Structure formats: structure tokens, C-alpha cells
Image (cartoon, rainbow, N blue to C red; front, side, top):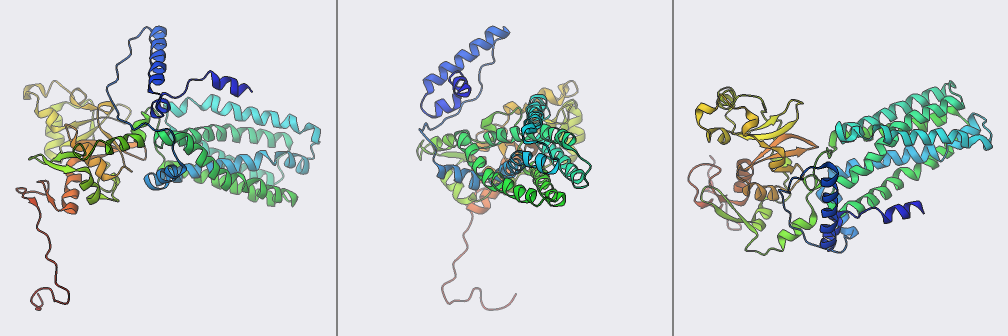
Length: 470
């Protein structure tokens, strides 16, 4: 009843509202929030500098959800399944069998079990409360991985002590409190991750989708396995269950480190492009469904790029760990020590904390009078991350080619597993397109002629060449 009351007083997501044809209500809601923030802080809010075109729709079907998670974002699907399966096994296995452990192995009376459950619940509550802010400051990826791995290691250690008979009801309860202090924070962030790493139209259904799968894989099997192990009455048998839960949590943490996406401090549309935005672009018509490439601005249709680059992702072409420059490097040193030795034309810029804060091209420097190079530093001429094109490593290459063609610098930072240490250039993508599509637009080199020559088909039954060996 309390949840129903609170829900009536919590505003709906403006994103959900304008996708589902409540754009007027969404505008009123956002305007009211902005007004309250301006009145409370006394600051003038920065006007928006980005726009997005979307196709409004009433609902998202399960077929669309399945296509998104398994086809468009398979690596993110592995991450989410690992995280939710691990926490579902741990929580359901431990929580629903805790009373049996207390009564069967520690001979606690059934009337006193509640006294041990209460501190266990407090540990679960304290974890997200005290650790929550670090998921935004240090980042989702290291904190989720860290809390999962820590809770798994502690669970394994507790299992060893339990098997050796070194615990009693009080120390066992204390161990559970510490384990779930970390596990609850990680599990809470795991649900948040599911809602952040998929297109915004699918987020509510994605949570339900992965919760159902995670519960089916870990939540149902956990109590069944632990129940059977407890009935054996052997601490060594129950240790097997503890070890299995620990391995699932540690494994999920390692998967998060390997494939996880860093979502802290990023706009949701940058993490996963809205499906409705792509659909809206397709409905603009054939005349608008085009872009230009090359010095002669040759027109290329999106359908042509899709056909040539089908099945290829940004990760197939991007430059991993490119040469970077410090934001405080003088521009004259950048030209002399970096460009004239490395000869690349674009470089990610690192800030004081070692994170990528922008992108600098050689053209940005050459457009200045040379006498100013010694007086300015890289950060004075770079394109900040917020103003740069950021593309996900899983994005189809054809879409990336179109997006690059519409930028001024024809470069993009790539979010590769949450890191911005990868780079994508128009040249690399366009050359791939030239080879696969047979379109000569000048990126391979030489004077473009429009089309490369096609291989002659050999008549059926005829030998290729003149029959002699070469």
C-alpha cells in the first residue's frame, strides 16, 4: 500500500512520456522541474545543445526486446545475465535457507530465528545506502565488479570456516551481514545497469526480461540445491553450495570488468541509441536517406551503406588505444613532438585524472596563427567530449559511417566497454566501404572514378585464363 501511495506522487519519466505520445505532458513536467531547480539554486540552467528525432509509439513488444538484447547488444546481454543470475542464486539460496541453517547446524530455536534475520536485513539495507554514491563517482563498472568479487571471496571464506566448524550462530550471522553489505549494493546497481545499457524504449521490459531469466537460472535452482545440501546434515556438503554461489558472484564480477559498460555521468542516449530515433530516420523517405562522402561529395544512400557493411561493427575498424595527448601540452610541442613524429591527424585528450576529456585534430591547430601555438595548450583548442561524436563499439558500421559524414572533423571517440580510449575516423570506415561496395570515392588513393572495375564472370564450363600456369 505504501508503494502504491508513493508511486502516485513520483513523476513519470519524460523520456517514456514523449515516446508514448505524451509529449505535451513531458514538456510541462520538465519545465516544472527546471523551474524548481532554478528557484532553489539561483542559477540559470544551460540551454540544451542537442536534438533527437524519434518515432512515437504506444508499446514495445517482446519480439523487439529479444531482438535488441540478442542481436544488437549480445555482449551487454551476457553481462546482465551474469549479474542477475549470480545475485539471484546468492540471495534466494541464502535467504530462503537461512532459518534451516540456524536450526539444523546451530540448534537455534525456531522462535529466535527472527532475531538473527534482523541484522541480516540491516546489512542489506546499509550496503546501498553507504556505498551508493561511489557508483556515481568511481563508476558503475569498477564498483559493480568490486562488490560482486568481494562478496564472492567473503562467501568462499565463510564457507571454509563453516566447514571447519569454527563458526557459531552469532559469527555466522555477522559474516552474512558483511557479505550482503557488499552484495546488496552490487545487486542494486546491477538492476540499474540493465535499465541503462539498452535503448530507452526497452528499459522497463529489459529489467523484467533479465529478472525473469536470472531468477529462472539462479533463483529457482539456488534454494533447491541448498535445501538438499542442508538436509544431508553435513557441513562439507553445504560448503559445496557456498562455493558455487561464490564462483557465480566472482565470475559475474569478472564478466563486468571484461564486458561491462561504464554508464556513470553519461547521457542515456549516448550509451544506447533509441530505437525510435532510428525508426524515425528510416521514415524520412528515400530522398532524405542519404549522405555524402569524399572530396567530390559523392551521394551515398544509407541502404547502400547498410548492404555493403552489413554484419560489421565499429569494433571491427576502430583504432584501439590510440596515441593520446595531455590537455596541458603547448600546441607548438604538440606539432613538433607528436604530429611530426606520429603523423596521425587526431588524438584523444587526457585530463589530469587520466580520463579522456576531448578530441584534438591537427586542423584545429593549423587554423591558428603560428605565433599563437606557444601561448596556447591542447585544452584551448580541443573538442570536449560533450561536444564530440561518441559512438558505441557495438554500433553497426553503416550507421557510424553516416554519423561521421555529418560531423565537421570526421572523427569520433568510441565507447569500448565503457572506456573512451578508442578512436574511429572517416577514412578507416570509408576505405572499408569502398572495398566492400566497389565505390571509388577517393579514400583508397588516387583520382576517384566512381566505380571500381568488376571481375569478369567466367562462362560455365570454360577455364579461366589461357590454360597455362604462371
